[in-house]
Image 1 (cartoon, rainbow, N blue to C red):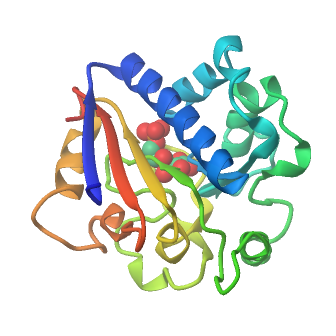
Image 2: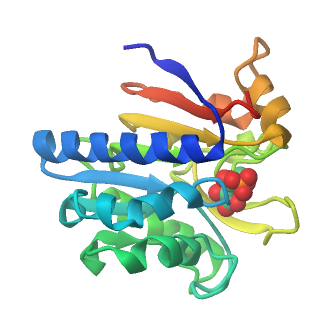
Length: 241
Ligand code: 6PG
């Protein structure tokens, strides 16, 4: 299987459907083979369509939620019930509709000072590590792409700081909360699969650069996502492609 693949869907709706189907396939496979499915969800608007589809009766009934463990790739430093919280957005469209044990849901804490929250989350990730590893080996990491090239809260120009598993970051983007807590490439790159979900013409330039000839993780943070023993799948719609 190729380490880096591109899948282009007709439009945003088809993209969400394709992602939901892919999620279900991977979940079934992971649970069959390893008894659990560790997933990192992305924030941002793009995945919400797909999360909504997973919450629909026909899909949610076939997903093995009891064996699924949810984490987040980044969080905005706002209270969990704030409308801008990545956790809250996922809660509203997905988590509040599914039968998942509360103990399987691991949001990035925002009730501690940012640096302490990052340390606490790194501990959570460590507690899911396989023997000999420093971090959970995620079965699926979902990521988005900003029109400025950022992914999770890995913003251009900040790559020197991506050494801990979880760090604090500052980045202004579309008026969203700028203080963030984010996983870094060392955490993401243990994953079995990373899916970038990218939709809309405003992302075309960033997508082209991310997958282009010029390799520079400091300018194009998504290029730092290269699972050592896994693959990257770019699921995009035609407008972005
Ligand atoms: C966040 C994110 C971020 C997001 C991109 C794309 O907390 O904002 O996790 O990395 O994925 O900004 O966002 P959209 O999907 O809304 O374009």
